[in-house]
Length: 117
Length: 112
Image (cartoon, rainbow over all chains, first blue to last red; front, side):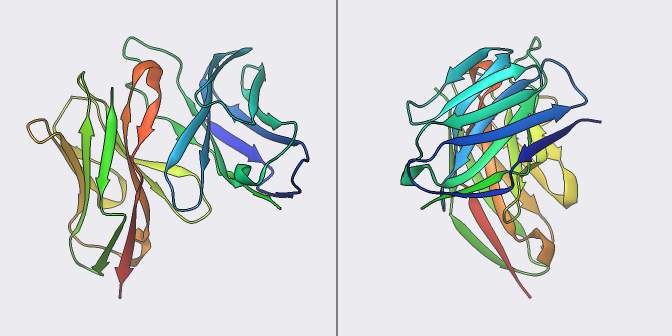
């Protein structure tokens, strides 16, 4: 069976510090990977998605970047955190493209709670 | 372009009462629709999905949803609420490339 891991679970960082959040998926190959942010009392905002190693698409211009150094590893980074980067960060995976690209559901990790002070 | 609207950011029901969470979508192509549930400080868990095989979709934990094309709706229901159903619920529509567009969420409270 497939599992998705995120770490750390919680993080408190000062403004201006760097960030690295990691997501890994087990039990599948060539997944599509996604990073979302969920601000307090709001829905989910798609930040980045990736269909393969080294292939990153950004949905929203911002202070963050993403990388996919391995097939099942997805990293969210920032060089200098802002207060507005606080939120709940969720990683998700989906089976790779099929004839019906939207058919397959996304599976979510447990999330990382980031507080920027 | 696809979009999702969830009517009601907060819904409160009594234990044993009917749960109805509303979702309307906009899509220029036949949609794939999803309902997810999120418990506090956890990730999202898939409840059910509509992929055009049947208009009435049954999911986990006794939930079901009915796709109504004429009303562009995909409302989530459960005949009898349980305390453990208290959570936030998200409706989503799939767009190009398999990405999901989520509604703003509905927080369900269940009163004893």
